[in-house]
Length: 402
Image 1: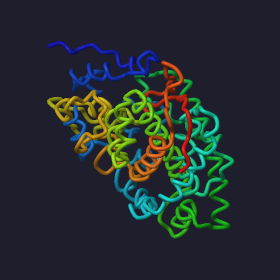
Image 2 (image 1 turned 60 degrees about the vertical axis):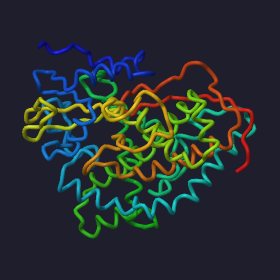
Image 3 (image 1 turned 60 degrees about the horizontal axis):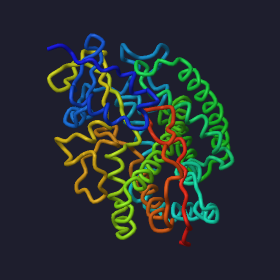
Image 4 (image 1 turned 90 degrees about the horizontal axis):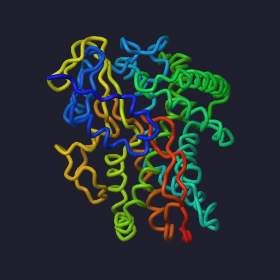
């Protein structure tokens, strides 16, 4: 049987970005799909992704791939691009800041920030969900945890956006300018954090950055490059995906007013709303793994050095796992989505992202009266992997006090 022809470059098509799910359905139906003489295998079925994310031959060191962009070095991005033992060592250093106990203790501060953000727009009758809520909340929280000054948040938005675009696969979006821009942003981040690291060495504080610097000074083999890369990961991943999660949830609620009414009537559904958004419209649409030895994908096998492209957003709507998968239902029972990946690379900040989103969505549902989209179309960011609106304009009648 001939291999079906589906152009993966369509994933980067602006016309597809607003609703990639019909294309993702097509890809899931022909998955696993071998491309590039079998060196690339597209996986879009839930069972295949679940197995791949846990397979011992599935490497996160993307520099090992024969398809890697020239000049990509192992560990140049973060411990997300490392395998054990380096991944284990670096993740262990950071994990103490994201335990359930530590995250739960942040609830009052998150609620305080949300109250402040809604107070700013209460008299306007309008808000951009991105600029007024979904971006400033997570970036403020992760910045406070790291000890990063608030006045630098707007600059982070520019650098983070450029880095996020670089996460789109090269074969689907070969625009060289996005990699150039990402390299420039990485250099700016490196200079910025090098300065903060020097300050914390001289004058430690009660923040995560000081903890990481202190661990390095105690001989935990955290190099300067690893320290900077870890800080970049925490800052960018600590807000970029949560921004998309909050925005995607608000958009889904506004497009499904029965679900917004249900959440308003039953506030206890807010956690279900977060989980359903993660399944229905995940902020991270795909990820990759490199074969470090033969890597099975269904009835296919990725050869050593080949790559598996895992379409998380397609797997999260797999009808073999989810009933009526294209329906947004915040009362849906059970988990099973792969929005936070699985295995040793399960998202370290999942608990914080869930809590921030739940508090923001609860406030939106309970306090914003008669919210409605300002227009029929929504503008999306240029990148299709970390997918979310570039802005989300909403009109409302009033914001009730907390």
